[in-house]
Image (cartoon, rainbow, N blue to C red; front, side, top):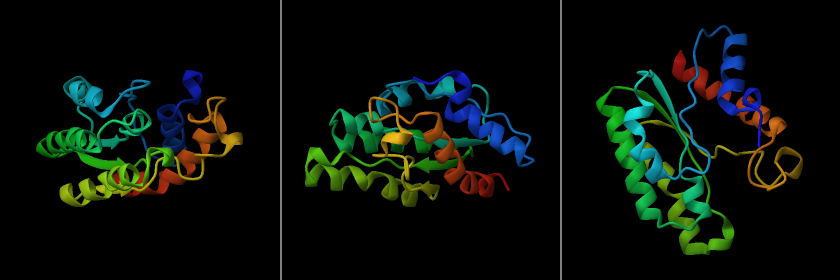
Length: 166
């Protein structure tokens, strides 16, 4: 629902460049993708030999109520491959919708901290922090950030990313 120039990767690259970082941010995301889809596309996503990867997958798994064990296994496989290639990773966490029940939410929400610890990668606790559940920062679907929401995400995540670059 966003124009290309409003998307997270474009706004992140613009912000990084304004802060003196000569980087290229490559959008390897696919709208509606699950962790399984990301796992199957990983080789393609790495063809440009990135130095840093922001791994932000799993939200659609949670929205669809997919088994958290499968999501964790998929993300674990991606992190193993990134480690094999010595790629720096920022794992961007997601939170399960509360309507899926306490057991599901607890299991899903623990995926990201567990994997960050296991693989010794940086963790950004919740990618949509400050944006989720805020109607003024989301599109009409109430799930996906609008342009202002993307700005807020970029502003919040920027210090973590610049620390990884530095």
